[in-house]
Image (cartoon, rainbow, N blue to C red):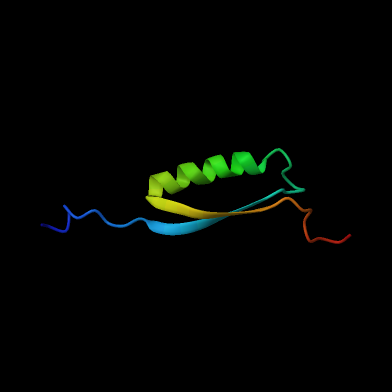
Amino acid sequence: MSNKAKKSKPKLVATYTRMSENHPQLSRGQQMAEIRKYAKRRGLKIVMNYSDGAKGGGKA
């Protein structure tokens, strides 16, 4: 079997989304949709999702 015939294993990745005070129009759901498209194009397998709904760490 040639190297081309062997199917390579996908890289396993985790995602991270958060609410942005600077870009509130980009929901975590919209971010995940874009991340999934990117992962599919790159042959990545999403195995864990992290999400942060809290406000940013700027000055209070």
